[in-house]
Image 1 (tube, rainbow over the protein chains, first blue to last red):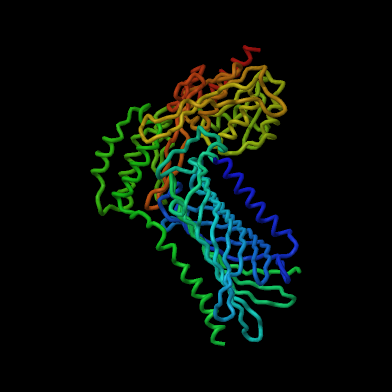
Image 2: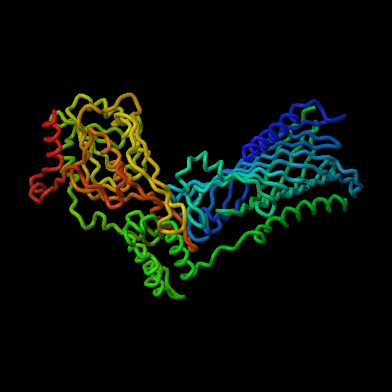
Length: 271
Length: 340
């Protein structure tokens, strides 16, 4: 069953990405964008496999994205990377290096509803992969700590065009709520809290054995983003985006984590 | 214009509303009061420390003894002393409480024993001035016998370092590998060196892992294997490892594994022990502590937590030190020359 789920998630990821990244147009006037961004993010994490304390810190955020959009559909593939460090409220020397990777593939359809301000509403689905890696500098043998989740979520997104100072803008907001999550959280992450290191298992065995399919009550992952697009020449865009991510994984070494990111993206349009 | 500002307002508000959402969703940190800190430490060690049975420690009775010293209003220094005293009872060099003002420790594994080593005698009268330095390895040829000193497994050895040493000493009558005063470090350094002395793949020890909260909840012994690697091995001539009470942790592990090979023996004093892999954890006030999390057994399944007795017990006397002689190196030289 587990092997089947791993295969299914891998195939879904590839299928979502390949089909839409390389297909030839969705309808009359599709626009294909390639974007890259720089920004900052802040992370907050409470990982009982690492510490009973909450750690927080700032990260450097970068991102690449592929966006295909028209009046009726939006397809987006994006990969975000966070590099940073976190600490707790008590000690400036208890530093945790943080490497976060977020990959998201979403596909949305325009809902035929009438909204004010020429706004449009999209509904669709998203597959989000999160790999959060933490390295505690004050620890040694159990310094490395990580979790991985793959979540299927329904997504609701709004887009509202407007003009300001004779320039075209659009504002967007989207919300994702979890449907089902596949998580990996091996026991060798733990030093405190419940659970044991299980070092008699190989790393691969531990990864495999810890993998689990969870519903929203066991693994709650939600994302909200708001963006401001400035439509510049040749349909290119500059996007200011704020993204908030929260996730929790219950179980042997529970995790609660949040991430706020502000990025500036340049989106280059290709017909 | 009104609608534009409303849209912008939605964007800005949306960003800020979620900014503090996790405060509602995330659990609060435990209060850093002495009672909670004490219980967190006691409970974690109770469930995860690996040598209660081997050392015959009554951890429950220690709770009673030390919990009675916990007061609601204690200074950090007072609290540290209570926790440090309780952890001292574990008689384990891998058990420490680390704060910005002090580090608790139990170093009786070497403090109550003779040194059987003098760095200055070793450097001045044996290594001399023309010894080779290959990374952290210092090597010399003394009376046609190779001598290598490795002072810390925390100093990383590269494959090139150990291969240079093996090449340099390949024509000698044997090698003396000195890990006295080596208090451990990274086991990968030990494994790299062992691979250059291994004649074939062998079981060189076992580990038992904690797998439940009770003091005797362990896995079955899991074999530790060592095998040859690299371009050349030193397996045809005798090797003597020099040990003393300050050969601890990764050095203890190294001695245990090396002695499994038939051409390798140890000489000097018993090693200091340290057979449990230490893991770290944190208390609700940010203090870091560590403790042994598993049990290491030698190839005959003997516990090595309290050290490994040498094949040849040799001690340095006061007279040796006055004369500038390292009698342990001297005896190792004689032994190897006699074998040739």
